[in-house]
Structures are given as structure tokens and as C-alpha cells.
Image (tube, rainbow, N blue to C red; front, side):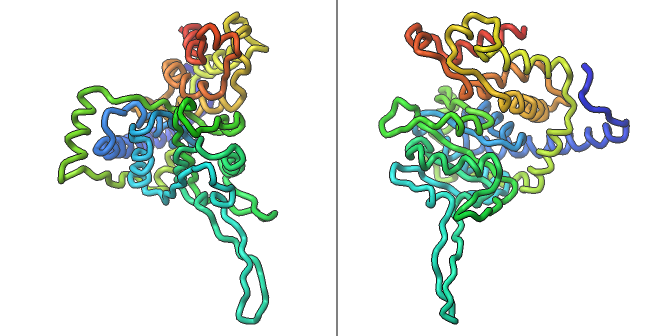
Length: 336
């Protein structure tokens, strides 16, 4: 498998040492998170993939599945400055970004002063993001893509690293709004949070109602996380994996596919951000699993979280019971 970059033996040895050190830190982080989050190891790993890739994450599931608890725990484990916004129908954009207030100094001179909103954090928890109106949801668009906000014509840079971890209730529930497609595309992964199995639920039931509940401890620092994100981008990726990503993403577009299911049943397919997400997320997943290079198996494993929110089926597909997951599964079959 040919790498996409040329490295000297010294560079390769240094990279290997960095990957091994990061692997140890990630094992500690996973153990720390596992003390308070039960039966959601796949969700934990996909969350770490998003953070190591430098991206944002959307967690979807019914209430009570520890989505908010997971985000709070990550702030502790990664040592990040974390803030939370509870999205409600009456939330306004200024409640997220901040606003200017007019102040009068001792000399009597008046001037505007900018009061930062909760978006100025390293880890922003957007809790129940789809309970706010589309206008308020769109207030996060610039910050998620460009890592700064503009208020009253002035630019304000956000802290580094900056990640949005949003939770969303199923759209079938009362009082929810669909997220705009442009905002969905800015989430690196969309992770479906399901119910824990019986053994995990039993453990959770006993542990969380005892007098000695477990607490998460810090395993990484913000500097460690940023170094890990830089390391992910240095990890070599084989040409076969690059070809698999392009084949998968381009086959999901009705305009360029040779698959009848996509051409007849998909309203729109994934854009170039999907390919970029695969390139980063596959590397991050390989590191988490202790491997030195990603494989096509990583592409298949991450196809759902990366493509699910970047595609939509048409009315005919919905009438026939064809879902986006059905299409993704068919696309992945072609990589075998």
C-alpha cells in the first residue's frame, strides 16, 4: 500500500513514537470515559474520532441515553474549557454569539463593549440543538466552519481547539425543527446513540444510584489534543483507501453514479466535505485502534456516520421504505 507522502527513516521513527504515545493517552481517555458512560463504546470511539479529526459531532437519540453526560465527561477528560447552551424555541442568535452593550466611562464618554457569548469555548455543547428555530441554529454556521464570529462588523476569533458537540432529539418528537442542510454538512460525523444492552444497563443502574458514583478524570490537555490532531494529518494513507473514498462518495451522487438505486431514489448526494471527512476520520480511527495506517475497513465502518446526514432520499424512496442507511449499505457492498 503506497503512502501519499514520502518520509525518511528518522521521520518514520518519530511518527511511530508519537503514535504510540498518543495511543497510551487515548487508552487512558477511553477508560476514564467508560467509568461514567456505560454500554456506548462505539459512540465513545466515534466521538474521539471526530475530536482527533478536528471536527464537530452531532449525537442523535431519544432522551435519557447519556448524550449530554458524554459531552460533559469529554470536557473533563480532555481538559477543555466547556460551555453548554440549552437550545429552546425562544433562544436568539445573540444568546449564542454575544452582543455589544453601550457603556459610559468615568469621563462621560460612551463606547460599545462586546460581551462574549457561550460560543467562546473550546468545547461547546449545543444541547437539543433542533429545538431552536432555524434562524438561531444558523448562528453557529460561521463559527463551525471558520473558527471565528462576526458581530457588528467586527471579527472575533474563537479559542483553539474549538469543537461543537450537539445533541439532537429525533425529528418525530414534539417541538423539533430540522437542521439546515448547510449546517448538517459542517458536522464531521452524525452518530446514532442507541439503547445499551442488558448487561450495560444493569451496571449503569447499580453504579449511578450508589453512594460512590465513579467520576471521570483528566487524561489529555488541550495542547495534547491539538498535537494529536496534527499527528492525524501526518499519518500516511494508502492509494487504495483514497480510491475507495472517491468511489464511495462519487457513487452516492445521482448525477455521477452508475447505480440505479442512487440515480432513482436519492435526492442529493454527499459533497466534497464528505471526502475530506473520510480522509481525516479514517486516520483517526486507525490511531484509536492502534494501527499505523487506515484501511478500506475504516471507510466502510465510517460510511454511516459520515454520509448519513449528507444525503437524502426522494419521496418515491420514502414511499417504498428505502432509507439513507439502505443506500449507504448498498454503496459499501461495492467496496468489497
